[in-house]
Length: 82
Image (cartoon, rainbow, N blue to C red; front, side):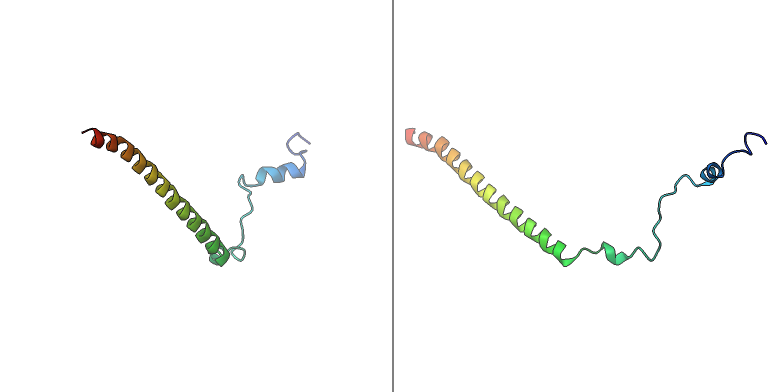
């Protein structure tokens, strides 16, 4: 008996296995309907979008108030002097 023929059967099985032995799901395990989000997901997304929209509008209003105050402070002293 030589070295090659005396190898364990498990080693031979491991050599013959494919390199990519990941689990591939059967067709019965996969469905296109699994990709469609539920109604709860839509409600959560719309709530977050609404809160973000309100925060953006408030932020823009604050920035406009600051810009208006700066413009007022820059232009009014020049008008009063001249």
